[in-house]
Image (cartoon, rainbow, N blue to C red):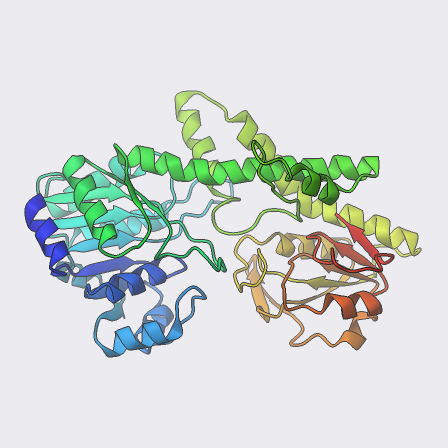
Length: 437
């Protein structure tokens, strides 16, 4: 089976299926199709299916013309009918893996997708999970479901593996095409075939590891590393504030060291689908081995506290102007979780807004990339445009996302007071109105 599949990959005789057409799945589907593989995207959301089939792009990391051209050429199409799995040889699962209300892994999307695939899985297929999850998911969850649902045997009739997604929305240098990839299959043959498939599509290095569990743990380590270091620098920001020291200046000084230090920066909390969530997958799994992840949980507590800390800092700023939180008009600049993108998943700005509202503040937001957002089932509408004249009508401007397109000079001139949680105004000469986190 291995040699036959390697030959089919070389000849572009493999049909690719991508389950989940979000921030991970759609860019991957586009790259597979661009590499010469017939590609079918699967998604339960009819709107995404229709958008893809119409050549309408909804993901920032995908080039509009690439998507349109591939659809027109018949290299890429989308469906919500999983019976078309019968026509697919390589299946990548790229569905969400959120946390539930109790901060425990919600792998229902992975499970339901795998069950949908199992009923149509054919001999000689390759299944790869890309969704971030706890170590053991591929072999403990996917493998039994696929074998029971298909009647096939993993390693003999089909190959199974894990290759973690690495997506950084808005990154101008690294994208799906050129980011190195890690592959861990159930058995050496599976690893070799899956790696060959990615090498046929991607320009980044492909690293083969000994098992899916290693690849799953590697992904958790990547994001836990960032979570903990951000937690550290957030705590440093709190301490520096108490001591009257600029944490931003401290970081700039520390990063002159050419070894042993990587700069991380404080902010109003953690955002994005990965860094705030993934460490909890390991925390949950570690309990199975009677171990509590102390460092991970502590950093999580610090990062989760930051939206509330923003309110506390805002109260101090307003207090200097003899104004209470209750009734003050607050302008939030930026609800995306990072600068220059339209993604607000897990954005700390949403919690900051909620906390202001709980204190009785009148909150308005403006984000040049996001006109409205949904949070806890409620739709929130922002300003459609920001006129500099209106900035002065607010008691406090809070910068929660450092979008590069903002005119910070003008905002600084008109604002009554500013709390800059991202050091977006670091180049402003007159800093008399600006408080840094």
